[in-house]
Image 1 (cartoon, rainbow, N blue to C red):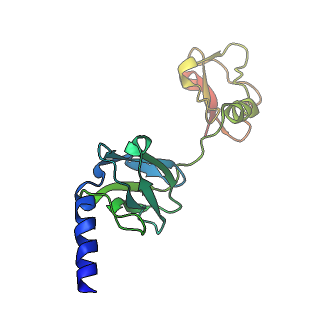
Image 2: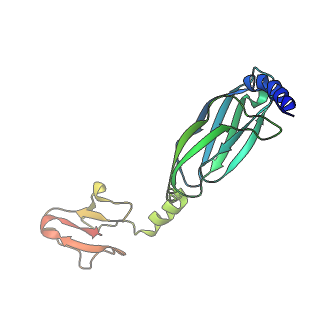
Length: 192
C-alpha cells in the first residue's frame, strides 16, 4: 500500500509544479459605499496546461471556488456588493478542491473600505419644485431688489432704496420667512 501511495505522490508532484500561477489581485474602487458594486480582478499565468483551483473570499462570509483551466480564465473578474460598512479583506487563495488541485502562487489579498451609503441627492425636478414653492422676491414701488441678496435655497432677499425712503404700509409677503424693516438705512426684505 505504501508503494502505491508513493507512486501516486510522485505522479502528482510534477503537476503541482506546472499548475497555473496566481499573479495579481486588484479591486476597484478600494473605497466604496454600502450597496456599491466592487470589482475584483485576479490574473493568472496560464502558459501551462494543468487545471487548478482557487477560492475567492470577500471578507463578509461570501466565498466561491473557481477552476482555472483555459486561456480565457487568465483574468478572473467578479463583482460584489457589501451590505454593511467596514473594512474587508478580499482574498484569492490557491486551494485544492478535488478533483482539481490548487493553483501555484501565494495567497493574494486586497483591502476594501466600505462606508455608509451616501444620502440620496434631490433630483433636479425636486429642486425645481422646492424653488418654485418659495415666494418670488417682490419689492414694493420705489424699492429695488438686491440681486446678490437672493438666497435660492431659503427664499431670503433684500430690497434697497435711498435712505429715508418710506417703508411700505404693509409688510412684504415673506411666506415662512421673517419680514425685516430698516427703512432708515434703505433696506427691507425677508430673511430666515
